[in-house]
Length: 241
Image (cartoon, rainbow, N blue to C red; front, side, top):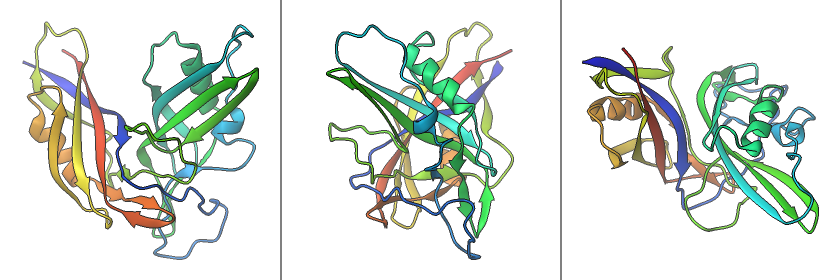
């Protein structure tokens, strides 16, 4: 038996309510005890201002959603991003390039910026009648509702040094990635309960549940108020010798 890495890929938020996306800038003076979720900045280096529309044929309307995940360092830099579409996708390349030069308001805990291992976001590209637009949202959706600029899904963080978990279960003959989607019920107070596997099979079920149970959460918000939600996260297994 070999070990396989259990790495967070991305989550899909299925909160039934929306969230206020307006938060204090990281240059603001923060009070001790204040908690502010990670959020896109409004400056010239914000992701939605840095990302460029791919150079595509001029004719025809375009609509693409690019779901991604990245680490946010305390200084507000995005790093280690991964977008979950084909590698040769022009829209994915546009987002990946922009992430390297963009900045974001980091997660603030007790008045101090801390590392957020998994920040989940979606970039939406749209071209209608020749007019191009790009929007960035700090969540993913699982329903058919319109994108809401005031929505923010829950955020998961861990006050430790690990960003992935190792567990036994792979074989040396394994050569492809496997995906497992897990979920927890999240209260308006950020308490996670009832972890479950909703798609995929894995011998690392207990390890996934430990990641979800040992983590801390900032709940989803609606109009600035915390609300209960279902937090869904995809884990990717990378076989290794």
